[in-house]
Length: 115
Image (cartoon, rainbow, N blue to C red; front, side, top):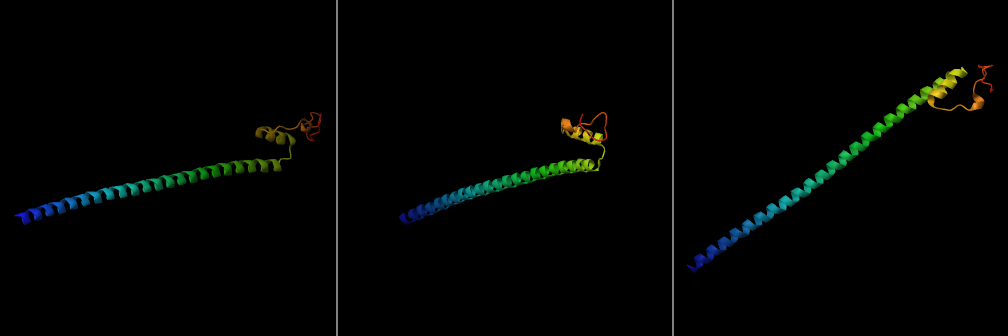
């Protein structure tokens, strides 16, 4: 009977150890899964940040391209203008202050001679 009791005790001990090992393995799996989830979340955040920065770069490039095109159109218009009044009007429209000595004379509007 003593042998049977030892056998039962050892059998119970083995079952407890197996259960403890199973729980430890489950815990380790949960910890590893949590680490993987955190890494995936970090990678997603980095990818989203990179995507957002790229979109902002594209938006800035579009804006600068539009401004450049607008300015080039104004410059082309100025190059083709041989009318001083129109040139002064374009300058005023662009917000450029024309120096006093370049104002048109009322007596000779076509030459741009100072008063």
